[in-house]
Image (cartoon, rainbow, N blue to C red; front, side):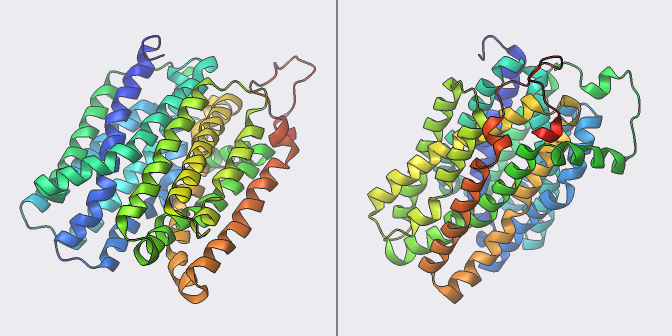
Amino acid sequence: MLRDEPQFARLFAGQALSVLGDRVSFVAVPFAVLSIGGSVSDVGLVTAAALLPMLLFTLVGGVWADRFQRHRMMLASDLVRFVTQGVAAVLLLAGVAEVYHLVLLMAVFGTADAFFMPASTGLMPLVVPAGRLQEANALRGFVHSSGLVLGPAVAGVLISLAGPGGALALDALTFAASAAFLARLKPRKTASEERAGTTGGTFLGELRAGWVQVRTRTWVWSGLAAMAVYHVVVLPSVYVLGPVLAEREWGGPASWSVVVAAFGIGSIAGDVCAYRLRLPRPMAAAAAALAVASCQAMIIGSGASIAVIAILEAVTGVAVSIFFVLWETALQTHVPEGSLSRVSSYDHMLSAGLMPLGLVLAGPVSEALGVYPTLYAMSAVAIPAALALLCVPAVRRLPARPPAADSPDAVTPGSL
């Protein structure tokens, strides 16, 4: 596919480098805070500074991405992130970085991220034919999954050789490389461009129009609700409570790294499977995959051996990748291209934007109830929520391709 679709190949190459840099940065930033004398609370503050803009600006990014050229918005975002990571690297390498420097830089970084993500989802149908969207999303997912495995390893080497500043310098260079590829991209025109330069409505009017696209498609808003539960309830078991158990009972970080690596390998396998899957009802399979993925809290709290937990986490990694590939392909296939970035902005807001809420609550709740009861409670909420998505008729019946407008099988958005 990379050979057959040159525009996608350029996008893929740039994003592959950028994702690797992001995974390196994910490991390097906490060590950067600690290296300048920051506390654990300071680590949380810097992390929150990068995530909070997702909640504040993602919807704005969705409106702008549908209004303007998406690849140009992504290019601008990459350049901003190149500068922020570059400045952070210089401050760290010069030995003059302070915690407030990193807080401010990560806030700017997160804001640029909030504009990049809706534009990225909306760009895919402009560089890939409709019949190859699932393959393209699977390849993009493969890059993200591979980064889960390679990124921490690269980060560990860089931090040991050049410190956190050196690792962030590499991240900055990957954004510069991504920007170079985006500058050469020539996607087809967006719906707004094809309207011969009309200005469209007001910002709030366009935002409401995007919400209508969500509200009138049952499979979309129910999928968003299920994903919100997954990000707020399930992922804290992985990011917070899993490491706690590893430290207390499993022998430390080495055991947890085995579990994380197994999940990453499973994610890669899931992307490979999704590349080949051809399903008449893809959202039904996606909902089933989300139910499997939602078992992670139960697996981590099962009390099984590390080997068993790692194997089961690999299975959930397969399910996570399949779900997200099928979900993104369904959005790109069934949502009008002119509204796609706005619809995806609700997706990103409810996932990346709300996830910090779960991360913040996981610690206090586990201290009050205990780690294992909290993990069981997470499972009791998340698994039924995912199964409820599978019970929605519009989810089970959504076809791989929208019916033609004059077909007797054609349906209105409200019936989906």
